Amino acid sequence: MESLIPRHVAIIMDGNGRWARKRQLPRIAGHRAGVENVRDIVRYSAESGIEALTLFAFSSENWRRPPTEVRLLFELFLLVLEQEVERLDEAGVRLRVIGDRTPFSRKLRAAIAQAEERTRDNGNLNLVIAANYGGRWDITEAARDLAACAARGEIRPEEITAEMLGERLALADLPEPDLFIRSGGEQRISNYLLWQLAYSELYFTECLWPDFGIDEFERALRSYGGRQRRFGMTGEQVAGELDGVLASEAD
Ligand code: IPE
Ligand code: IPE
Ligand code: MG
Image 1 (cartoon, rainbow, N blue to C red):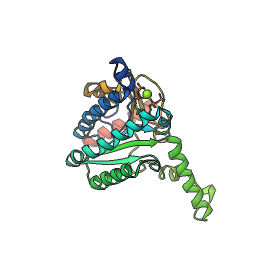
Image 2: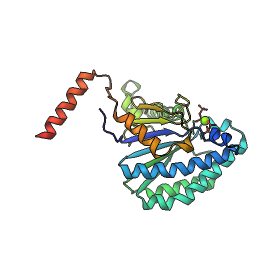
Image 3: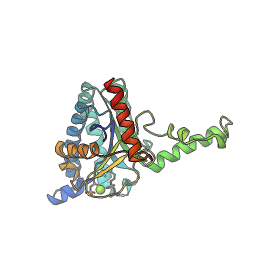
Image 4: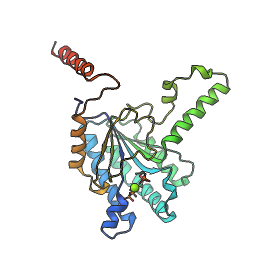
């Protein structure tokens, strides 16, 4: 059985649009309600000893949405960043953003850089926002860097290992996500952390993101706590290892 508290939780916050449609509200009202919920989940995570929380805010494919929705989403992102950074800093949260920032406005890029700088020494919770992020983009960037190293003669292609690629990815300094949660009923990864989710426990719920409160989060944590992670080993091996740990703790 796993410890109830995962070190790293990665979430796809899906279902804002449907939440709004059910209430005959514009989609952006769903996104605003989603942000309210983020506040609660971040606070709960910081208080419960989770080390890292990675939230998917905007995928590299979300540019395909109507331009108005895209624009409003980025306005909301900027607003939330400006409004929340002080509170996050006070709570000891370290904020960072992963994804390709090059298409962002100068103002947004500056706000991100400031928020990251201000909170960089905080040690309570690593809050990671994935914005214009795609798992394939992440792996491609790492591959490009390795290719550049090879072209400069610093490494030989046959020396390249999975570890070398992994350490060039976003989040390389954090433990890999133990628990992946997707709200909103879809059961897919949608180009999220493709490499990093290799051994994550997956949890899907029908609950729409603005309704995914602390109770739902605790339900996901309980589900996680009841699982046996085997990483390729047999169940008996894992149970044996655990016995060993418990025996040495009793010494
Ligand atoms: C997730 O909610 C938020 C973003 C992708 C920005 P959606 O906007 O995808 O909500 P649904 O899937 O349409 O309900
Ligand atoms: C994934 O949700 C991206 C975010 C939550 C930011 P989508 O709603 O965009 O995913 P698909 O398109 O349904 O797979
Ligand atoms: Mg969606």
